[in-house]
Image (cartoon, rainbow, N blue to C red):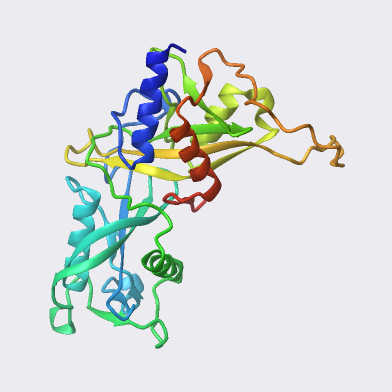
Length: 336
């Protein structure tokens, strides 16, 4: 790969590692099977707020909906047409709890395919007053601060894990502040920083044309978080695919606009993926065989549309090694 193209790719990866984004170019995989994202039609985004007071009590709201009437949950709800994710979070917290808030960082992204993606934010109160029963409406009955010890009938126990994540991050932030970047995207896509490391070297898997770039894959209806990385790896190194683990470590940054319905309702997840030798070699009958010597380089590319690029910048190489070793990035989980 020519030196200028290599520098451009490495500069792009540096941007993504720094929590920034890049223009979302046409997808390399899945675009012909994917429809443009249209909020309320083929995609649903949920925002959820984890908010603590000074004594680490958690803000909870009492549901007004019939199917969970009087049960308690975190402030949460659907993103509406024309909203950014952060705008939706601020609106939901105001409607359900009475407070203005400021998003601090995303804590976790959960997905069940592009048709349901939940964005969990850690946030803080900036104004307003707590909602009481006198202000009960169809959004919620009231709000309260919960010490997590007093009995409280919960709508779902899934939020207990989210509360624990918020406490963990509040006490010891394990990944950089990550908030949605205001960049339009037509589809739900993943851009992959897919790396292989050996002997303190790091390689990036790139698509060759029309200029070398990081692979992107459009989400399908049955998409799960691992789909894009698995598909690209199988496409590039089919013979070695089953001898390696394809680990989607998390999200470096995400890009979303949402202002133009049906045109910018998509999301681009810039994800870090590590291709790693399985480490357990077995015969067809399942019995183990002596492991092969450690790989000194990535598996050979078999599809001519891809190429491995060995990272030239020592600084970038060290950052990628550290990130892949610690997974100190925003987690994204499939609920399938």
